[in-house]
Length: 221
Ligand SMILES: NC(=O)c1ccc[n+]([C@@H]2O[C@H](COP(=O)([O-])OP(=O)(O)OC[C@H]3O[C@@H](n4cnc5c(N)ncnc54)[C@H](OP(=O)(O)O)[C@@H]3O)[C@@H](O)[C@H]2O)c1
Image (cartoon, rainbow, N blue to C red; front, side, top):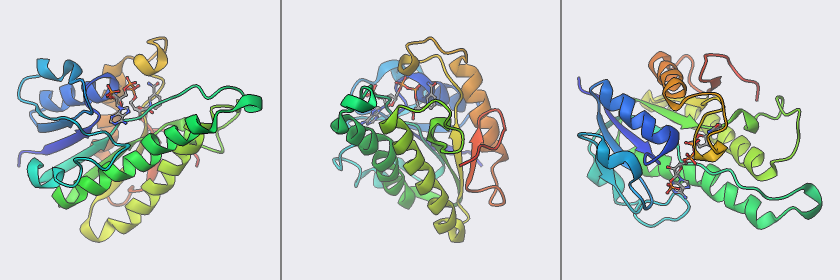
């Protein structure tokens, strides 16, 4: 059976590399972006859905009717914003992190659900910075809080979608060389995505709801 994936936020960084590798595996791929299609146009055969900003309701309602039946959904879109130190913390920036990383990921998942086959797989791209147990450096309030909230949503999704045999992986992609890290991080997108796809491939209902590092390590909440 040909697999058909939806990648939310597929126009650059890890999302774009996900699209590239999924196409390389011969899968059908629909990629969403909010504006700039970025590198998607250079990838043969990818179907592109534009004007989908995870932070707004606009356009999401009609998506499931357009994308066909999905075997896999990767929710990747995310932001890391500088909100300043605790003394002068800009709470509007913290709220923006929530709107995109937590609510946005849930909105996109909600929109994709009607198109997902029973037995499909859902991969949420989170961050180990959302781990409370792993936090030994403080700061990054908006990012940490919003990714912790996404992790909580991922756990609930793994329970709520079990009757449909949809398994959910909550995956940290590593510290990856993308725009988000000013390309200063050590992990190449191709290696990060190879790890993410290994987690996706191994994902079953028995492991649904687990918080993984892309390298296979189970991360603490
Ligand atoms: N890079 C790392 O080291 C690292 C570590 C841990 C977790 N992550 C997570 O991995 C995911 C991908 O990150 P990346 O490193 O590839 O970052 P990136 O290069 O900055 O790409 C971010 C992607 O998210 C999309 N996006 C941002 N806001 C959006 C919105 N409101 N609506 C729709 N799409 C939106 C961007 O689209 P636009 O082009 O329209 O902005 C872009 O496609 C994120 O969830 C991030 O938190 C990354």
